Length: 97
Image (cartoon, rainbow, N blue to C red):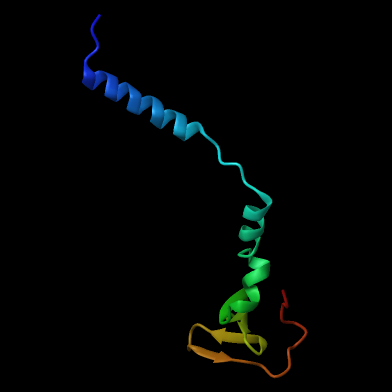
């Protein structure tokens, strides 16, 4: 049986592609240390202006926390009017998550 050059090249390409697909990279301690630098607990202090801990109050308003460079700010927003307030004193009934 005679094998054509084209068939041999195709078979060699297929074998080399399959073997590369099944090869696994071995991760070192250095790789894990580099990845850990970008974990959320290491970069959270660098990101400001994010909104979290949103809750809907019984009257339809929204209570949320905003992370700023000066610290956390707590807001109450009314979706009906578009008004947003930062209360001076936090009433104990508001959920602090």
